Length: 276
Ligand code: DDH
Image (cartoon, rainbow, N blue to C red):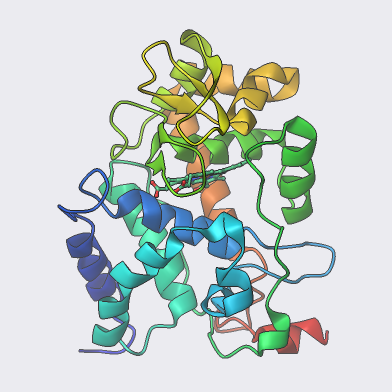
């Protein structure tokens, strides 16, 4: 096995995506969420957080409530790490998100290797940097502006809720009827369905369609309530190609947040960067 053979790693990731006894028969959505949460801790002002370092391996970050359920994703990837010990966890987790999106018929997302794992525990970002689903547009903006995204990119990224479901964070259910196929259905449903605020089986408030089969989070509903976000929801509901292009660009940017690269593309260790 040649070190640096990322296409072999991609193949191994593809093989691990079908999981007959997990969720909707697919590890794909949870792998996408792992890549996102590993990256979404970035703070552009301090330059801390982000995917470099795979700091979710540390207890502090793993125990952030927002990361509930991501142990499954890490477990699915562990045999691949054993098979290809030369790849860093930080590269593996981000690559798995990219491979999963494409596998589920989403767009190709640019991905570069070079992230490193050997960061000191003191550089683990604090809890609370990921979005809280019970909140609205102001919160969404403060979280994503902190990472360096604009309104259009926020809406594009939110389209990842075409995938997967809620389970284990208090919210319940999938956003779309086919949660293992990437598409712009989420945006279409946001606009076309009637959404009713209801308490789910554990008493948490969420939005459900008439039959209680599909759901939206309060933060998802904020995208149609806020006029500046709504413009983009409408565009992406209308134009799947535009959504795919914008999603690929924004997701690629997300995975690179905080990854400062040297001349050969190798990422600097976070502690080196924090001293800059
Ligand atoms: Fe999300 N997300 N997400 N999300 N997300 C959940 C599931 C998934 C928020 C909250 C939740 C993004 C943005 C936001 C995915 C990808 C992305 C769940 C349910 C909650 C809660 C978890 C569970 O119960 O298991 C909030 C709030 C936001 C926000 O923007 C305000 C973004 C940007 C992405 C992305 O990938 C770019 C995916 C995929 C899932 C499905 C996971 C699964 O296991 O299935």
